[in-house]
Length: 439
Ligand SMILES: *[C@@H]1O[C@H](CO)[C@@H](O)[C@H](O)[C@H]1NC(C)=O
Ligand SMILES: [Fe+2]
Image 1 (cartoon, rainbow, N blue to C red):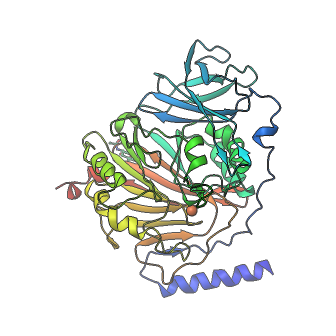
Image 2 (image 1 turned 135 degrees about the vertical axis):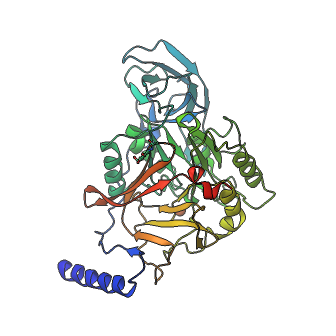
Image 3 (image 1 turned 180 degrees about the horizontal axis):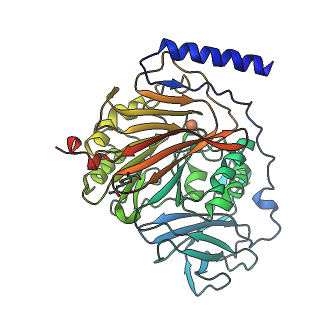
């Protein structure tokens, strides 16, 4: 039965491929198993018996040589202090930050959310740390390198299902320097304990490498009149370095930072913050892009939640308003690639500007395939647009290895049952090194 339908689909795919002969557009014939269920909820933060025990630890970069450590305790007396050093069990350095908490829908009160910025730190170095002076849990992270090469993992719409677990296992199995997440983290969807279980699920990875995130629609969690503040949990739990660096944005919903000593500039955009000309985000982006020194910065990357180019039927057109408002800014600043989530599938476009292939436009990638509970988006617009190079509705994750000032290798790793399989790859050469794009 399964084999029969697979054969039919393969035959259809071959037919489709021959109908498109001369086109390089590929719709993958791979057939996914059904989505896996949401992981059983882990105990809520309030049930944590040991009040000072840090949990949901994650780290994010602040400027070129500092790291923000964020964690949660139940106990009000737990200090927002991180002790750290380069030898396991020895913590000669420390920093104290701040504590916050929030309540939601009267019924839920978060634990104490602490954050402290530590540094200056040496690049490419293992640091061992503990939080709130709790001796029971030692964590460690490796700081990113200050020169190329540099490797990103990029994955959106992560959620917390069996597929998420598989994706995380695949990410953990090979090395990387930093994870970028283009929105839709926990799929808490108003039920706040799911933020806590998500924090615990990602902690083994997010406490060991910087996780840099931007928001998706599932982070909004606004309920008119009852919870009028958008992004309450997201902003409290996933504070990003919006107030650090060369162009502070003033909003946790969009920001930028440099890695590899400035060789790569990463822009995190906010699909759910205002983006029209004249808005704070637009003005900030304009200023941020104007500061880029292409002699020093080889690659410029942007992340956004709702894709600006998308040939999946899901969320068709949702990113168009933002694209119309901001595409020219990114094009003018020679942004090399734009990574989006939201659509639960993988799709890679060629370099595009204003809907057409353009050698000086960004490569567009949809990587909303982390593994969330809503399942896959498997209905596509046919025929596949000429600008869409590869598309497939599977879970998985992407990696961008910036090898040097001119070359970066993008690979997409499908969760092929329980094996990670490289199902798509492309070498991206930097626009900064292309004379035709720098007249
Ligand atoms: C950059 O990396 C690419 C891919 O590995 C390689 O072909 C190229 O020679 C490298 N360029 C320099 C200047 O090392
Ligand atoms: Fe989304």
